Length: 109
Image (cartoon, rainbow, N blue to C red; front, side, top):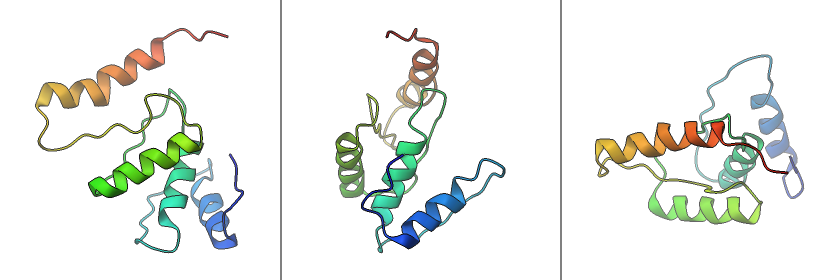
């Protein structure tokens, strides 16, 4: 995890919510570098065993976050979007099937 480019209060937020000894729900308002905090947090959890949900982002925010995650070097396929307009089967594939397949894929060194 790279904390370069983060302000001290960004680091404090990330350190507080990334404490493995507890499970927390964090609510943050827009502004003050929220996108950088979200992208860094998503980078921390960028492993095939994790499923991270980002709820209620606008299409502009989704595009910007996806671009930022690509710049940060997060794994493929990166940010995937699920919307209410998708059919049940499509949502199922994105949320569960592709996640399970990715977890069971062999690691190639």
